[in-house]
Length: 199
Image (cartoon, rainbow, N blue to C red; front, top):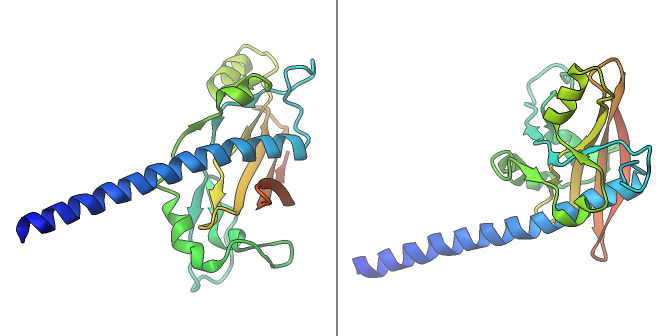
């Protein structure tokens, strides 16, 4: 009986690990598609073929999901390192987006996929950089503006995603926006954009 339970528990652990690896692999493919969608539909000027292109960070930034507790008197400012759950449930005058039943899934994404680097297919077309490279340029008094996109947050059914795009200049300029995407007929589309900040 003990052997049977040991084999069953090993099978369960292996199945869970296999399932999470498959989800991670599928999400990697979807992340590339989302990044490409954001570049094209948000008209980001990042293509190598354009001499005025602004480099895009090849390292996607981690976005943390924060829970808002119902006993607070007022909504605090947007957290610098992330987004509130409530902002993922709806957009633009409370249009429903990710269902509230996905709360645990969204919070669990804080522990999953903490780093992501844009793959080789996009890197062939897009002018890429890193934060450290741009910081060195800034310290050398060179043009150091660049764009970055966050690692997408997904609904449980992988049909909705949220990302943020920012332009950083290391000075008194830049902007940030929230982008809500939906996958329809296998293709990601931006359904809503909202400006988060501007300098």
